[in-house]
Length: 109
Image 1 (cartoon, rainbow, N blue to C red):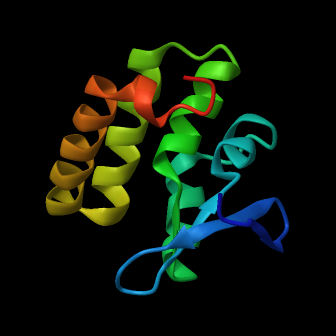
Image 2: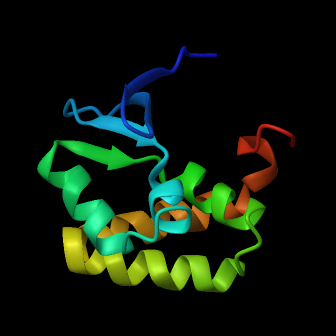
Image 3: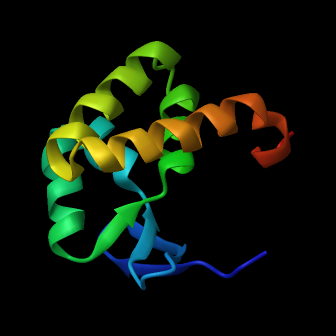
């Protein structure tokens, strides 16, 4: 398992994209714990050349008792606003694959 490093604040570095953007965990806490609107969190990360770990966000939301459909709806709206429709379509494809194979991805699965 890859080592995770703190990036400062409540974010933890989880990896990098092929184009060098940092992937960070902790975005859900910003929304749930601190009440920062999701689109603001995503915009801030985008401005800093970072992306949230989408699967960590989703699983953290479920662990906090959020309804799965509500999580997806909130993410879709914010992603569409911040990253645009092309990115959103790729994200939807990635999440559909995750849902089909979720037990393989989950840490406890």
